[in-house]
Length: 294
Image (tube, rainbow, N blue to C red; front, side):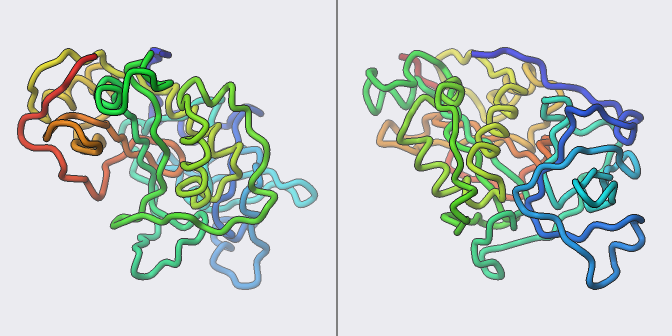
């Protein structure tokens, strides 16, 4: 397992110029313009969903708008929450003093499961000892304590699933690289169909982004016993000081094992890959949670 520190960004750095490695992948058909105040005009050209652009700069520390380079058009401004930002090949946590990105609030009631139309992500991390005690110790993930279950687009209430995507979005992927965090052919196929199709990213971009979030975290080695939810969350925070308790969801009783056993930890991220508070939490764990070992 990779044991990397969560990257730290200082607010003063958030609106500086960036290197050629910085990219912005459009997840919505938002307008772009030469000046920010022109973005409210009608009949503007829009971003191509799934297209990756070079990022140049942001308008302020809150990163409300990003300036991107569009081939054949030039350098333009667009809203940052209209896509996914990848900076220097790492996924960033929010800097001190920066405000959360502004986002349309979607829900199942007003949305028809359209790719790219969601509010934030949950990165679901499966605790392998519990999974393997229930499913059998010959499962591919049983040699590791944690794997990625999936990266799930979320509405502020509910979530989309099985979104329609054009054939060109189902591009080739490098399974050898994906197996480093998701060692299951079935899971790779299932998670793309149910969740990845709603991300607004191509299949390869979706798994690249999932891998970046995985690499940005350092996960705790848990001992067996009973622990409070606060104790488990604090074990995660101790490894990742930039996280806060309201960014971490615990999931219990996902399988057929004993009641109130830890199955997963889920961490919430903005579309840009910045850790943020979850707006909706699963309540499947009791006050004290069992952690089992193989």
